[in-house]
Amino acid sequence: MGMDVSEGDLVNINSFATRVKDLLEYRTGLYSYLQDKMDVVAPNLKELIGDVVAARLISHAGSLTNLAKAPASTVQILGAEKVRSLFFFTLHTHTHTSLSDKWISGALFDTAVRGTN
Image 1: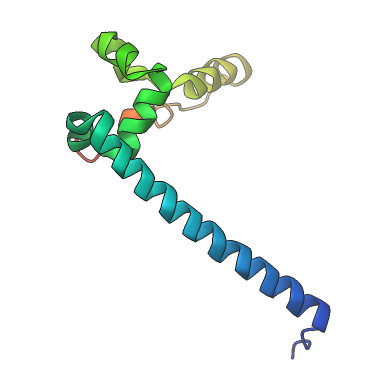
Image 2: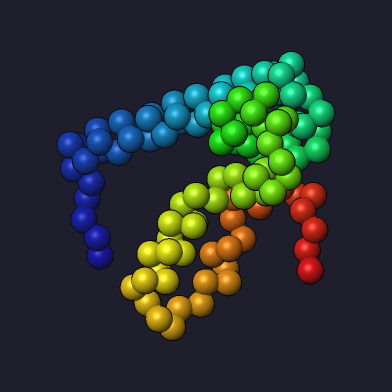
């Protein structure tokens, strides 16, 4: 029904599988590094919202000091710049588009502790 895999295709498939395995190992190493660093840099924030989201918030704010000085209204919308740009683009180009699902974004949307209605 199908075709036999040629030798050249088999080499490419093996090369791709090796790269995927190496990238998975690299990602695991980076996640371990992030966990260790967040334990040192911001352990309370890590416990509240998780290490990945905490690192993302610090990154969007520019530094941990900037995040600490930011008012709650600013922290709430950190990471939502792309969505705001999409909103204004859609507002000017489409007249009958529902954007209710586009508003729930930003770095804090990924947390498990956020309240739901």
